[in-house]
View 1 (spheres, rainbow, N blue to C red):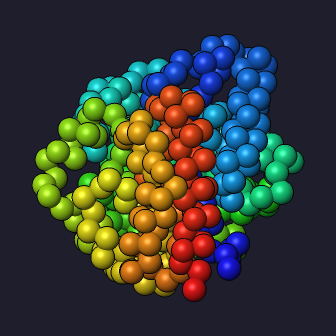
View 2: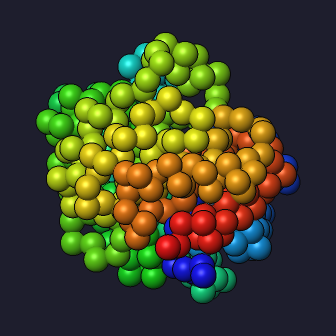
Length: 345
């Protein structure tokens, strides 16, 4: 007997943009159009991925981040006090790679709603649960230059307040899950414990919807793959931060698992949390089989209670080929269905 509510499926957030919306296979793609035509194209791409996720059998849907050029800057574009015209070159993620980043030049304030349009499109076109992702405060401040606050914790807390403002509005829009992406948590582990979790808690202040944090080892781009090569036979960054996250007010923690060198027993440090286990590798074009996905879920069940496990992707799929991403969605859902029949007892 299968249990339909066991091992619900979701994705970390992003999906590839169709070629008619933007450049493909890029993390920072250029849009193909502008103005109202671009707004229509973003809406159409969002609808396309809602339908594709539904057809695959994914349970908790995202907008695929079709309306944003980049997962951090898609939020920053709606913030006053940031200069995008005079970007500076800076090493980010502890100098893993260089980027041209905008500069904080004054007090931060939202210009208006950020993701209202995407939330409303999703809520109007699916009866399934929907999730909106936003960058977390630590990752945001690692992706820009500060010429105003002069203190990274003050800057992070200022962003946490803005994220909370938008999160409360998204909850009112009918969004079921709000997720904060914090890849920087795997880089600045001491900061996570001293102020990172505090900033995350501030992001979710007053929310009654489900809250999540996504912490991965990055997209399948060269800079991240090269970094992983330096991490040795075991990736133990999670060990340093999971106890602090277990004590946080966040509901769900999304982590990288498939084809990663993360010791799976580290999941047991997240006692009390729902764990979004990455069972799909986003750094490989090889399509997982349902059996591989189910086997990864089975191994995770040694450390995560059955009713606390969500099957997920390792990270976003923005730079991936669209057809490969679709096939991986199918594998995710099929693998979870198989796991329900295997591990229901």
